[in-house]
Amino acid sequence: MKAELGVQPDVPRASRPARLRELASLFLKLGVVSFGGPAAHIALMEAEVVRKRQWLTHQQFLDMLGAANLIPGPTSTETAINVGFVRAGWSGLWVAGASFIVPAALITGAFAWAYVRFGSLPQAAAVLNGIKPAVVAVIAIAIWRLGKTAVKDTTLGVLGVLALAAFFLNLNPILVLFGGGALGMLVRQSANRVQATSGLLPALSRRPLSRVLSAAAAATSIAGTALGRPSAWRIFLFFLKVGAVLYGGGYVLLAFLEQGLVQQHAWLTRQQLLDAIAIGQFTPGPVLSTATFIGYILGGVPGAAVATVGIFLPSFFYIALLAPVLFRLRQSPWIAAFLDSVNVCAVALMAGVTFRLGADALRSWSLWVIAILSLFVLLRWKISPAWVVLSGGVAGLLLNVVHA
View 1 (tube, rainbow, N blue to C red):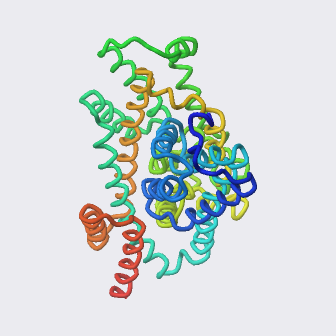
View 2 (tube, rainbow, N blue to C red):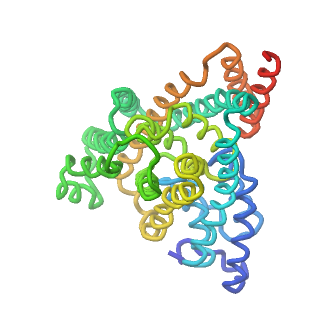
């Protein structure tokens, strides 16, 4: 792995403790200032580790980014983890990942404390009411841009429509992703008459598709659906399982959370989920820090801690275990077809959950105005979504003052 992804030979390598300090300093800084979602995070990392520090070549960085897109979990966080591993080995893996995650978790946790304590105040409610339509606009833009890339042909377009229909029929999001991935892979490869070049099909033949899908469904099942305050262990298990199967990045998290927390367990209302998503989008760092906010609502500080650890822990193990082979996977037409199909289904899930969240967020003409203006700004100018979300909160506060 180091031979493939190692640093340029003309760049002097510092001692391991020095490299760990460099990693901690860099990713703590990025965790504080990286507003704007995964694309913005990746751009900041590329500027730091390729252009400024020359730890990696541009091609090496692109290979790592591609690898992160092939496995479940947050792309930008897994890229940070991989940079840490390449720069300082196993200890660097943990230092870089934790340094990028912790600032976002602490900031989100502070917002969660304020939400629980002051969320019922008119001013706080007004700010959140303005943030929500802006968040819906941000997600809609992401869906549009990702969809243009994901829908490469008519077959994938039809698969996306089927996935969206499955979502509205309340099928499990994991079944939609893996079932859609398997279906799209088989259809596209049969149509193209391409022979398998990897061991994927033998593996599937040894484990029938029904067993694969059943295992995926079980992965999101947590014993019991009783209402009330869940234990820290149940919170940890829920977010661990979400983190282990979350394809498509932070935005697809919305579909998993809406299905599990609102519909299946009824631990949150849809309104609380939308508030959590708004804070997760507004704060810097990984969008998955939404888990910190939700964990605090469900179980206070212990709940926030176990939710954060649970949702991010699988990413560390995926990078540690799979990085040596990930760079060869795209060469297999079977796996490439599977990943293309999963991406389309992920975009469809994002569209479905955005429709539901929009129904909760856009309850008056003034909130529609905020959403439409947010869409216009995001389409017209290259501006960080964090500023759009912040502006939505300010607009909500001003509207509250006007109506008072």
